[in-house]
Amino acid sequence: MPTFRSDLSSIPRYVPGRTLDEVVREFGLASISQLASNEWPNRPFPEVVDAIASAAVHLNRYPDNSTHEIRHAIAAFHGVAPEAVWVGSGSSDLIRSTALSVGGPATSAVFADPSFILYPITTTISGAESIRVPLAAGYRHDLDRMLDAIRADTTLVYVCSPNNPTGGHLAGHEVRAFLDDVSEAVVVIVDEAYAEFVTAADHDSVVKEAPARSNVLVLRTFSKIYGLAGLRIGYGIGNPDLIANLHRTQAPFAVTTVAQVGALEALKHQDRVKERALANAEGREFLTAALFERGFDPAESQANFVYFEPAFSSRQLADDLMAKGVIVRRLGAGLRVTVGTPTENAQFVETLDELLATR
Image (tube, rainbow, N blue to C red; front, side, top):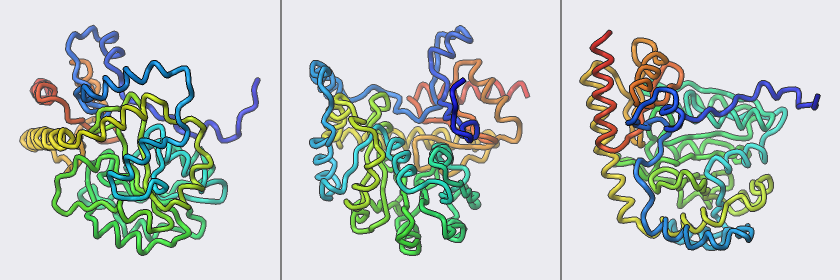
C-alpha cells in the first residue's frame, strides 16, 4: 500500500455544488435551476466564444507561461505595472500558491468563519494551523477580533469582501485601516472575487494601492461576472517582489491558452459587464425581498448570491428544493442561493412556496 502523508485524512475535500446532469439523472427532471455555484447564469460574450474557437487551433503548443498579453491588459485596466499582476488558474490557484509559499508547520492563518471554504483547506494542505474568527452581527467581518487573533506565528490573513457565503462587504476605509494595523511580516489576501457585483456607495477597492504595500495581494476572477468559470482564470495584484516570491509554488503553464485568450477578450467589454452588474442587483433584490416576505432573515448581500439560515433543517430544505429541480448550496446552518436568470429566480421562490405550504 502506498505511503501517504500522516495528516492526509485531516485535509477537508472541496465539495462542489451538484451538477445539472447529476440532478437530472437522480430525479428525472426536465427543468433545473442551478443556483448553487455562484456562476454567471448566461453564456460568455459571443466575441469571447469566437476568440476561444480561433485559439483552439494552437492547442498543440504550450501556453504562454508568462501570461504576457493578459497580464499587460489587466495592468492597463487597473492602472498598475504589469509586474504587479499575477495570473492563475482561477483565483483559487493563487490562494493555494500563497498558502504554500508563506505557510508550513509552526505557522498559522487567520480568516473569518464562515468564509470561503478554500481558506481552511489550503491552510491544512500547507501544514499551517487555521485560526477561525466568527463573523460579527449582521454576518460582517469582525476586523478587530481578526487583528487580535494574529499570533507571532501567523503568516497569512484572508479578508473576503464581499464575503462568500454571506455576501457582506467591507467599506474601503475599513479595509485600509485593517491593512495599516497588520504587521508587514504577515501577508494579507484581500479576496475581491465578487467585487464587480458591488453597488454599495461605500465600496472602494484597494486594488490600485496594493502594489505599494509589501504584504497585500488583492484577488479577482473571470469566473463570476465575466462568465468564464469553465476556463479557470483569475488574477492577483500586489507588490512585484511579493508576487515574485509567491509565484515560486505555482505549477508551470498553469493558465491555458484558451483561458488567456478568453479573458483578454472578455476584459474589453466593460459596458456589458456593467449591464450584468445591474441585472444581478435586480435579481439579488428580488430574492432578498422574497425571503423577507416569507419570514426569513437573509444577510445583506453585495455579491451574486443571497444567504439565509432557516429556523428548520437547512439540509432538508436544500434536499427538498433539489428534488423539485432547484439546486442551492447548503453550508452548515445556512443556504446560499445564487442569483440566476429572472426565470430561475422565480422558480426558486415558487418552489420555496410549495415547500413552505406543506410545513
